[in-house]
Length: 215
Image (cartoon, rainbow, N blue to C red; front, side):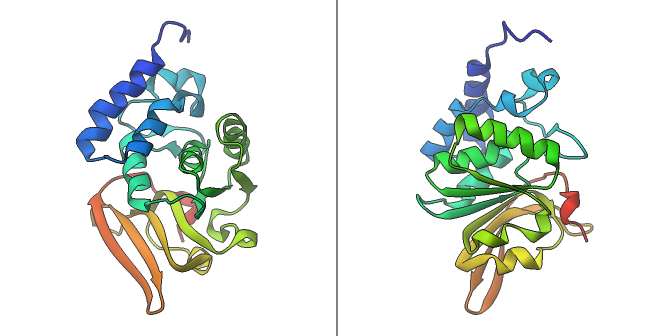
């Protein structure tokens, strides 16, 4: 497909005005980052003109590039502060990892699918050079770099992998979409305190289940 006449910059602007702002995304830095990052480079060439639509775009092996509105709301929910250690689980082609890096976090990315991992590493080399990548089982996290202040799981889960809880710092938080049987899926903030784990549902949101994290 010839994309030479498609205005990706305008598509990014439309995404901000028609998807992010109506969804109460008001974090100025996240908005500006998403207005700048060429999301179209995170998908197959044949999908590029759909990169800013409000849908999850298929990548490979039942994996998806999460829709912009949900990405923005999850990143806003994470409340990333500069220099915090952030782990992106299911980093795929690098979009969410790049946002976290541009928010000045110390970012680690793990991806199980080798093809997606290579794509993600190539994308980050262009736009987020400080992201540290590992190709390995998502359920095992990035054990050599623990503890993390924030773990963001890019996809829906039914249960929280115990290894990820172990890699979370005290007072750290896991941000993801949780879906239980027969229930509507929610974005959740999972916090680790001296009393254990607390889970707070924050807003309705749907993403495909991350099959690599299903029991």
